[in-house]
Image 1 (cartoon, rainbow, N blue to C red):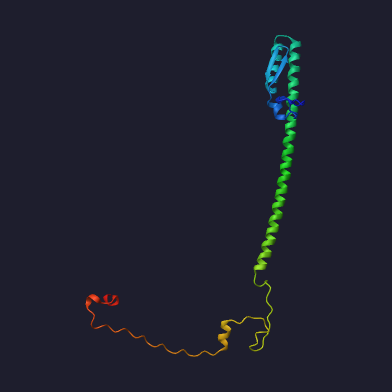
Image 2 (cartoon, rainbow, N blue to C red):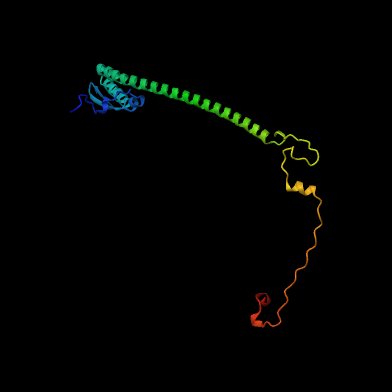
Length: 190
């Protein structure tokens, strides 16, 4: 079954306001006293002004006034569209300025915060500002109460060093007398 709701697929059925740019650049069909005039508002104004001049030159004051009224109508349309366009442009510029000021203020705040953090980090990295360990006085060799770990260097300082015995020279292998030149050891060949 078909739905009882019929939707129009016509593009002209959209409910949206007439945009300003659409009026300025839109092509109109104007039904004037001497037939249709087609074009943008500015083109229609120019055409009706030309027709009004031609009517004045032929001493037809009624048609001249009629063409001037038609031209005035399209001048009103065009001027209203341009006023709206200017108002929107000013509004956008104002919003852009406000956004830019907000961005600048945020950037300034961020740079101030970054600088403060850098200062804090540099102070934290400075050994003079770093927390120093407590030094505990120990008496004698009793390191068990201090909580310190005994290192090999500390053990070496406690014991007196014994002088090392000199090394004995190594014995060199004696060459074999019964070896022939073909059966020499690799050391002898060199």
